[in-house]
Length: 481
Ligand code: PA5
Image (cartoon, rainbow, N blue to C red; front, side, top):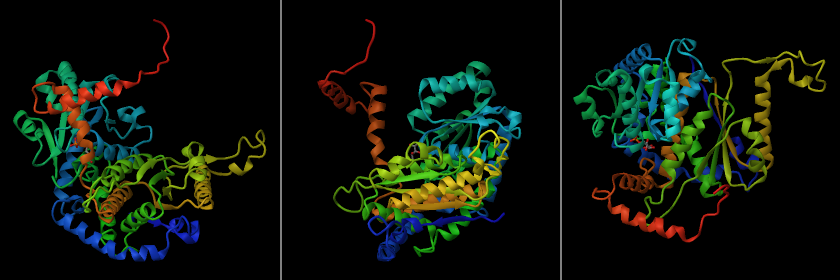
């Protein structure tokens, strides 16, 4: 099936939203030299330590894709529930693909209700209620758990692994318990690899050169997709189609580079330091969630190529059309003009929902809503929001998918990954690391391990901080003794 993902940037330009808040062709032309340098820098990273671009290769990965599809089928045949244990880049991609390609109410269906595939859950938090309730909803004896962690050291994921292993072992015994787990982890560095090999857990690997948030097209995303029965070759084919266009050094021929450049200029020249992604599609709802992490963790950086601190990065915000028209759009239209909007649209929805007009005689004045599909109102509401933003001089871009299927999702995610990597190069920062999350992790580890551990250096600082922050008494609403 042909693929079409269209990028329309008219409403980011001065001709449409006005000269104060829109970009000019000249600004984009002036960026060409920096864009060429950024393209070169991206190519250099691709040739050395950044591997996600190479994943868009159906022929080169044919055997791997076949094996992942077969593993997915065999897992699907053996369990009623499939639970992903992971966080950040190890959870958001699989969750977004399940939402896009699966049944929108998939967790409410029983196994037979969804092509005889397991119900799929993503446990990306360690809230004890969330975890305990999941073991009620998805009984461990009928469940397969996919432990996804690139590093193999993330405490949240390891504690989930350990806790669910205990739950399964209590039901089926320690020998059989291992059969309920598949580990997805780094092919070279993860401490989970020796565990899997020595103790007989099933495992899949992902390349060391692919970072968590860029890993949806590795086993991280493809195994859960295969378990759900999605066509993973098509997902990679979509990425391949995107890669063919998103490899061009020409800013105006490469939609990923162009959107990266538009966002970079919107931030650095027009002071739009918030990037809102607003899908007009329930299926694409969690693309905005996935993208929020990709954009935030990749571009929010203190240091870059300059010797001084730069502290760059737009704040990404997720919204949903039309739902958030009744929640956020008032702020978007009348509040601070500090945002650029990305609308995700779909040309052909997979289902229709007609309004035939049976209520017309009883509900007069609303005949304009009937005799058509509910999709027509969805589209009209989108145009209305885009136009209202334009009138208020708020820049936006549109990405339109011909339809939501495996190829379009693979293509869209790939487009957004290239956009993010390229924007990182324009900012002159490293979009592939995340040093800012280390302190929190170190402190949590020190608190869990206590005195005498190699991490204990943090404990004295933390105790001082905990004492000193209590200068002001808490103000409480309390009843009773
Ligand atoms: O994008 C990233 O690198 C991070 O968000 C990681 O995915 C996240 O911290 C989880 O790490 P890991 O997959 O090593 O458990």
